Length: 124
Image (cartoon, rainbow, N blue to C red; front, side, top):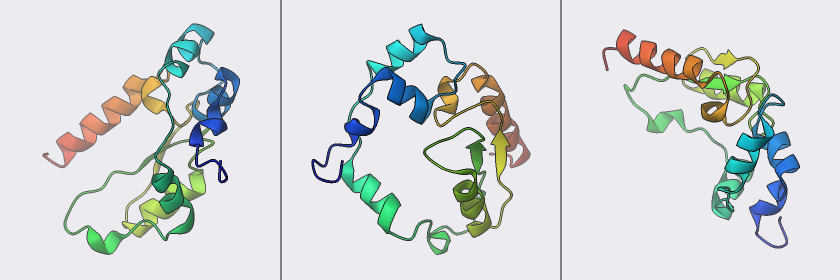
């Protein structure tokens, strides 16, 4: 990836995409449908996430923050999610049995419900 600047090499087969983004429970037909829609990621984004000190909580003022993570995420570790939450002085919340693409997992409604409840709690 570093030599070609092509992030798609990381996920160039359905098997690799499953390992990176999805839980083992995703049905093959859904995996193949989602895989067909994948494309290369911005190389700059990957560079920024890897080599630059993120997050930057000093840039966020008086904005409520909800930090969610997936227990089986292979892209963003639970430790990174917790560090992000700590930087914004909030508690990280995790969903078990899910991987990076939580919105495509079978229990995606649990995540959506948590977000909706949080928005109601904050009156947003």
